[in-house]
Image 1 (tube, rainbow, N blue to C red):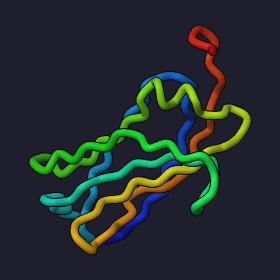
Image 2: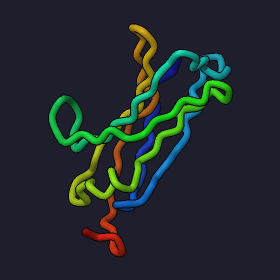
Image 3: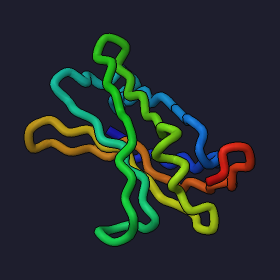
Amino acid sequence: MAFPATYNFNYYQGDTYSFTILPKNSDGSPFDLEDYSAEFTVSTERGAGGDRYVCTSTIDVANATVTCVIPHLTGRDFDPTITHVYDVQITKDAEVYTLLTGTVTVQKEITGAV
C-alpha cells in the first residue's frame, strides 16, 4: 500500500462537505475493505492536543470506497482563524492504515453565522 496520500482542501464554515476515497493496492487493484471500519477526524493541531472533531466516515465494501463527510453542525464549530488538520484511517483488528491526511482552510460563513 502507498498510504497516506495528502489532500488539502478549503471548507466553507457550516456547510456539509463530502469526499470519497478509493484505496488501491500497490498494483493498482482496489483495496479489499471488508471487515474494516473507518474514522475521519479533524483537529486544530496534530498529535494528542487541540480540539478534535469526529466527522462521519462510511465504507462501501462493494465499491471499495470510503466516503467522508463534515456535517454542517460539526463544521460550524471550526475556527476560521486557524488552519485545521485531518486524517482518515481504516482499522481491522490490529491493522491500522492512514489513507489520507492534510489541511483544512476554513472560510467564515455569512448567512448562517452564529
